[in-house]
Image (cartoon, rainbow, N blue to C red):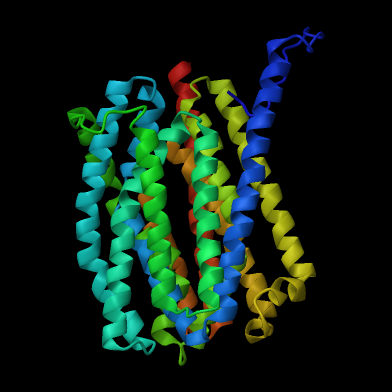
Length: 439
C-alpha cells in the first residue's frame, strides 16, 4: 500500500470514502512516529554533544573507536539474517506459530555469527585502542564492555523486527523514548561526578539491556519464545548468509573506513575525536533511518501489488532525497552554527563538516535503496559493490593523504559513489523482474 493513496478516477466524494480515511490514518501514524523520533533523536543528540563537550579529546577518541567497532561487530553478526527476517516475516507475521519459528531461527544464527565476528574483530579493536594511547588495563576493560553490549544487541536486533512488521508504532516509540531519556539523565548526573570513555560505553550497554527487557516482554505476547527453529527458514537464511558474507564483511569495514584510516595513520588521537564529533552532527539522519526501518521498509515488504510497489518506492526515495538535499544545503550555508554545538575544540572544522555531511547524505541514500532492495530480496549481484569500490579506492590512493582528516573524508565520500549507483541498478532490475513475472 502506498504511503499516499489517491482515489481512482471518478471518485469525487472522498470525505466518507475509504481512501481519505486511509490517507488520514497513514498520515497520523507517520506524523506521530516522526514527532516522537525527533524528540528521541534530539535527546540522543544532546547526550552525544554532552559527551563531546565533557570528555577530553583523547577519551572521546577511545569512545569513538569502541562505539564504532561495536557497530561493526553487530553488523557482522547480521550478514543476511535481517534480510531473511524482513523478507520472510513480511509473509508470515500474521501466523503466530510460523513467526515464532522464524524469530527462533534468526536468534540462533545471529549468535553463531557473533562468535565468529568477535574472534575476527576483537584483536583489531585492541590494536586501535592501544595505537591511540589506551593502557593495557583500560583497553581490556573497554573491550569487555563492548562485547557485553554486543551480546545484548544481538537479541534486540531480532526482537525489534516483531513490532515493526506488526506496525506497533507505539511500542517502538515507547522503547526508544525510554532509552533516550534514561541515557541523557544518567549522563547529566555523571557530568557532575566523573565521566570517561569506559563509563560511557557501559552506560550504552545498560540502555540496550533495558530495551531488550522491554522488547522481550512485548514479544512474549505475540510470539512463543520456546518455538523450534524452522528448517526452511534456516536454509533460506544460510543461503543469504553465504551469498552476502563477502559483501557484508566488506561493507562493515567500508562503512567505518574513516575511523579505521584515521586511527591507523593519524599522528594524534585528536584526529579520531574530530571525526567522531563531526559524525555526531550526522545523527539527524538517524531519524530518517528509524522512519525507514520501522514504517516504510516494513510497508514495502508487505506490499505485493506491482503498481502500488512502484508508487511506494518513488514516494520513499523522493522524500529521502529531498530531506538529504535540505540538510546538505544547511551545512553549506550555516557551518558555524553547526560547529557551535560541538564547542571550541572543533570550531575550525568547516571544510570537514561539509565533507562529513556529504558523506552522510550519500550513505543515507544508499542505505535507503539497499533497505528497499533487501525487503524484496533484490540483492543478486550486490557482490559487485566490492570490486567497484576497491577499483575506485585504488585509483584514489595516489591522491590521498591518510594522515589528514579532510583528505580521508574526501576518500570516503568518493568511495561511496559506486555502491549508490549499484543499488539503483538493483532496484531497476527488481522492478523489471516483476514486470516479466506478471507479463
